[in-house]
Image (cartoon, one colour):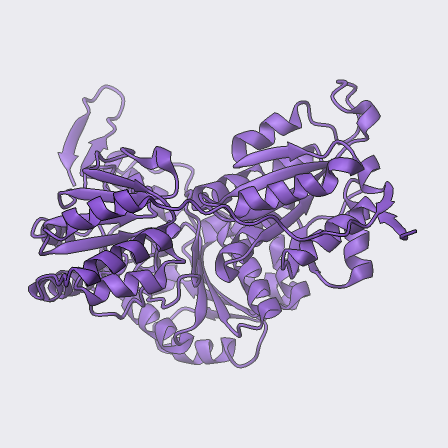
Amino acid sequence: MSQQVTAGAVVAAFLEQCGVKAAFGVISIHNMPILDAFAQRGAIRFVPARGEAGAGNMADAYARSTASLGVCLTSTGPAAGNIAGSLVEALTAGAPLLHITGQIETPYLDKGMSYIHEAPDQLTMLKAVSKAALRVRSTDNLLGTLKRAVQLATSAPTGPVSVEIPIDIQSSLMDMPADLSPLPVEVPVPSAAALDQLAERLQKARRPLLWVGGGARHARAAIRRLQALGFGIVTTTQGRGTVPEDDAGSLGAYNIQPAVEAFYQTCDAMLVVGSRLRGNETLKYELKLPRPLFRIDADGSAEGRGYVTDGFLCGDSALALEGLADRLEAAGYRADPALLADLRAAHDKSVAVLRDGLGPYAELVRQIQGVAGRDFNWVRDVTVSNSTWGNRELRIFEPSAGVHATGGGIGQGMPMAIGAAVGAAVTGSGRKTFCLAGDGGFILNLGELATLVQEQADLVIVLMNDKGYGVIKNIQDVQYGGRRCYVDLHTPDYAQLCQSLALPHARVSNLQDLEGRLAEALAKRGPFLLEIDMLSIGGFKSTFAGPPTNKITKIPALGEAASAQPQ
């Protein structure tokens, strides 16, 4: 007779079989059987975050930066509510994340008794912010539910899946199942006929572009084959690094600049793969893309979203692009070689405009790029610096290297960077993690600095401090007649704060000191906060005033008329 274990131990053993090496969360009376099993088995590193929101961001970035399953554990009720924003971000980014939440004892569940930690209809709340939400109803369906949850999270389109496990089930005894292996990932196979048709149409193009989104990060080899046939490459911010960003045949993430849009009009086909063509990367769907416009996506419902397509193929991006490359190579296809020269000219013009607009901060970008090397994690929060240069000008070279808050929520960058740094540690990748954050968002998850120090994450935070919400100030200047309100912030003295946490810190008030401070930050492994005093250094030469659009609507003062002007 096999020795019985708790259901919590079965959860831990299954996650080990899924290749999970680290998990994140906050310990609670409603998840202790699982975490007790983690501690006893010793195979999964558990990172105790200071809040569920931060823990969710950590698990999300762990998943993206390691190209594997991220795991987060929370308590039920308020704790499950606290992670909602993180799940929205993971859903927006398509991060494969398993969220395990406790639940109250089954005899009291769904009875409306205001039982401690109970949230009315919690499962419906989680369904609204997850790809799916499931409930374990007994030890009999525990493993099956977990296997299906992981399969859903890791099958395209990937995303977060929440699983409720009531506390009485977690602590129940059961036999350790014989088969703990995860279910196979579901891969949508493109039809041969659809590939034949798309290849035939692409053969007519002499100047084709491939628009690469986050759903094609695993298709690097196939993309290289199309590059060899003369296709030009442009990526979204999620698709960055799929092609190294110093590759002469790639625009990188310079996808909406005026010189690039003009270049698009000289192209005679665009193939969009694994991208939602999101509004902030298409000038709210007004960016003029080449025609005909073809699209490949694992999600069949993506057809026609944002842009009317001239041809749609449903299937896994790597399989579809490999199939296209097979057919085009067999047909002896070659694009017009002048395409890549024109692409490079559009890229260089866009880079020159951006660098000029950075003013003094062009030197900051140059020096960070110099010390980062080619294999590092580049994690960014929503801040002026990321919108201007972090999302495109500091180059990355691997498809898992770039992590940013795709949903636009501020304050998520720093806990994301902790998750990426932990991922680098447990996988042995050796990557240094760099985090770009602004002081306005940074304060939201300030408590996670304690997690950073406790875990000794190998991470440099570049904190751009202008003591306010810089983007909002710029929007108010452009759209609200300079009427600034609610944007100036009381900001900690980060030198004193870091000293209290035993977190190494340096402040740069003159960029002539930057080289030495960067050397100090990189002198040894572990966390470091590099504060950039923007009030002393000065502002950017060009102003960023919100997500790019073709129009700006000016909001009048009381009694004035509104006006719309082109940007």
